[in-house]
Image 1 (cartoon, rainbow, N blue to C red):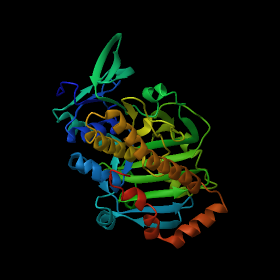
Image 2: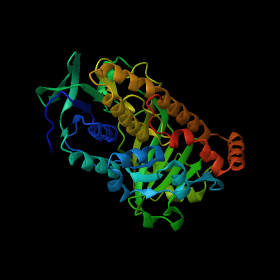
Image 3: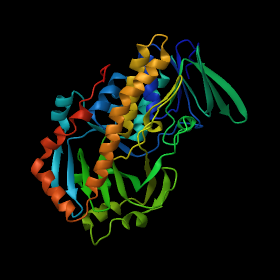
Image 4: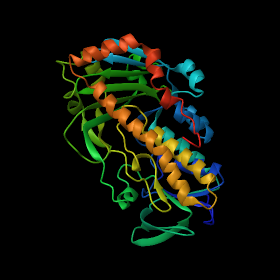
Length: 402
């Protein structure tokens, strides 16, 4: 990998996931050097699908990762919302109309493909260094920068830079240094699976996101990997607060949350297709009182873990990195004020998305008769008016003052 030298313009990023790599690419565009450290021995192209709305794809394209990702991402034509009995509720149009409206496409992609696109782009840049098997233990801010103590096995080493960015995920070590409580279990679990597209009927191989809403659970299906695969996500109320996001789970465990008494057999047949599922307990937390101090700040899930019901978790991390780079580029030697300005700007937007995701959690899982009223209201509103309600997310662009 390419080596970055010197600390006068070096930013240290803890975490080589989607948020960390996006931040690194945004920073080098502003003529910083970046050292990305991650405790993993190797970066795996793991995970399931994710949705990348126009506020996100326009950044990925600007960072140089869009062309690489576009080879496998799928441009979504519509979000098709159905009831648990498989009755149509509403179609939200996307496709070329939405791309024209927002200036960037709405993509569905496999998380591993996004990770690979970001990693390939980062590794090709001479001012990004990626160090693996290296865990951030502590840091000290001082007038000339920040010293970060890292551990590799039994050995402690220091890294020096002008700032430290904590992109180390929902169980962030750096957030713990702020004295903040750990994220809370949301009482819901997501089960994920990826199927060959040919395992499903043509209706579910097309360029749509399918969303089935139920009383205590819902199911999402959409194409990924250049339409050769379909991503399934089944989310249900659950009281088992395990850790990790890739524990193997049996088909029967998932089907038990989609009872034949309440769910269409059509939906249950889709759920029965995967031989196994990966279990992902959902955690979030209220907005933080502080994202950082001194020359350290947080981004992504380290700062604002959120429920997936607006499909914006990865998107907010990517936005964070882009905005952070803009603030540091304008900072000169005033690094700490720039970090605080970044936090002040990003806090309200990410908190609003967190609140919106929690509202969708309730909306998705209304039980009868509230679900009937919801379905009637959605039909009456129609897909285009529903899309209008997301303008504040999808049409976002960086503005220095807000």
